[in-house]
Length: 332
Image (tube, rainbow, N blue to C red):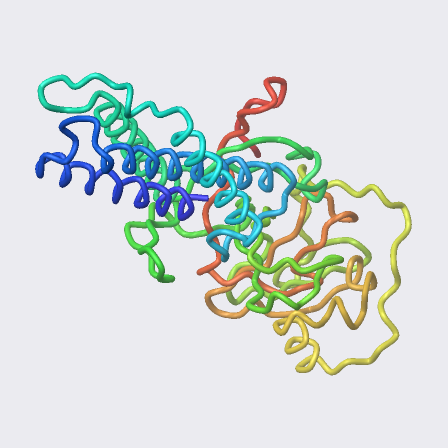
């Protein structure tokens, strides 16, 4: 969302820059053909922005979010339709034609420039805050129950693991490293839009899970019980198990080396299906990657099925639930 806001801000910033340029050239001094044309341009840009943001917000509410794509074709189409409608309305209303001229400046142009400056400043500031510091996130599924419920809205702390350099995987000034037990928001680890996991394509979508394995850890699940480095993890008050049935260990005899490879290549769940839910591993978490699981262990499509999460995909740590009011608080 932050990249979308940034480029929308840049679009309005270009309009604002050109408006100031034309103002200095004396192009907005009265009711001229250019003045009316430039008001139509502003109306088209403003309508485009409103329609695109509304479409993006609607997709976010549905959980239909692909963070690797700036804007979908459908979102741009809605924006273009709205832009045409806005331009048509501006032509029909003739607002610039009726406006007064004060201090050598058409009042409509003055209003348009003020709106451009307000939108540009607000959107750019919001995009910077969301990119570097805080991002809003909505829980899309029940995999983290009861820590988070479907529909919970929360803030993600994006600077705790370091500030990301735009369009790179590099981070700097990290407050601390990821540790076992952290609840992280991350981009799903797939580079292929055609790859299906968890019942569909998860390419570019944001997930939320709890870290159970750090780089170098050996992780295993036996009859639903999590083991890390050969020891049963008993202190998990957040973990819940809603299914009394336990899937037996898969009959397929896969050599340990191949098992590790299939897991890292996100093939294990496709090969063994639900059998990896209750009997998984052992696997070793690769350097620079993490193993994650949902707190709702029997209803979570997580690293058991599709492999580890690279550090570069981690966006931040779940910080604070702000909606609904009955759920306000810090997660544990």
